[in-house]
Image 1 (cartoon, rainbow, N blue to C red):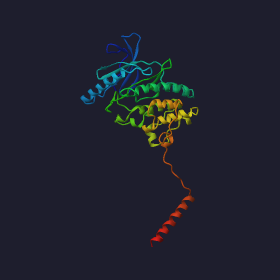
Image 2: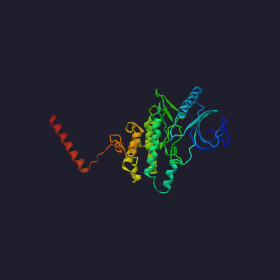
Image 3: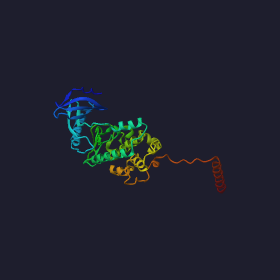
Image 4: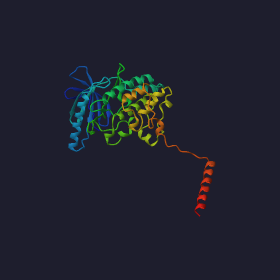
Length: 329
């Protein structure tokens, strides 16, 4: 585990560390003061590359980081924090982003749970429309950008009510030749991670992975319960409880849209995030093709016969066997 930066430490003769505000598997996130712009606070995302890698691979990892950072720095959307700088510092690399004040949606949900209530559907759908707009912007970049770690704690709400999608720690930029470029290797957070995101082959991940995580996030926000992990659902197709069985106040079309987005197979999810948004808002119908609804994941139907039926079928079978035996004589 890399040693954390200390309060008062200055990076690049510019960014003075105030405090650590987050910790991931590959580094920390710090609140820092930009000493060149008085009063400006920023968030520093630390990336600690695996120094056990061969020299050439380590060099390629750093080059990938700078390529991706340059792409992120060009993004400009009201629901995304602006990346303003990136630089190396010893064996570590840093992304400098706008600091987003306010609570994250996980905290908002926990408050509702403590009060033994649910977040209002209207409020959550208002947030969802903003999230969908941000994801659509990312997915329509050339090449597309996949966030890959959408979850309540990565969604912050500013004092003005604006949602910000933060932490680009697992972001994937889909290169035209299908070669995956990833700032930090990882799988995301289990309750929100689709099946195709597990394993080392990132080429199977596309915008539909974000749609799954988005749906799982809304499931959690509207029920106060984390959804069953995709890996467990694969083994037990009945393990995901429909949202309205937990929160009966939910609209039917909202439940259907969430289950659509959380389909295990990518081909059964919405193709575009705006399709999911429109289904959530009731503007379009959720498709009911095989594979899209919950019943498509149910275990195969098993017929259970009564003792009388078993006796009857046995008698018929013995009669047929006897008939065939007689004919063959």
